Image 1 (cartoon, rainbow, N blue to C red):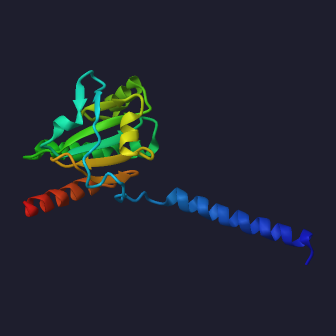
Image 2 (image 1 turned 30 degrees about the vertical axis):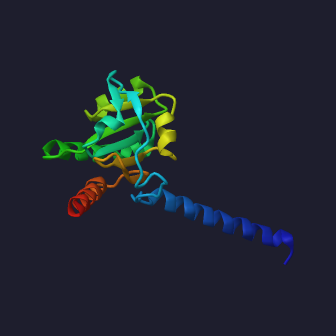
Length: 184
């Protein structure tokens, strides 16, 4: 066969494969899984900032509580998709005897855009400013959304890259709390 006769077949095959991959990406469900990090099991980075409403935030002062830091940007589609799950989590914490503290860490976004998002979509937990990206760098955030869990002793226990699935965060935190109680 000559090159002129083979080229259309090769181009067609590549096209079919690419279309198949695009369809697969379009219909694939996001998977929630924890990810490794050199911070796991180590003291959380020192984080000091202010919230979007002007209050001081110091992660070291949160010792004694389980803390969730959810890195967020209002234009991020997976962030928008997971927001209802964070609302469910926050509502469940309001009913808890020992609630987990939830904080949104604003990643490369304006206060006005974040306020508009939360005004429209709900959520009354604090939003921590990370104007210079220092918090994201300290945690090694790859991209938003990314969620981190810090235990009551100030140690990093969980890193989740990507969109949270329903119930994942609560289940993992419940497991970590049970393990901590069993070992004490």
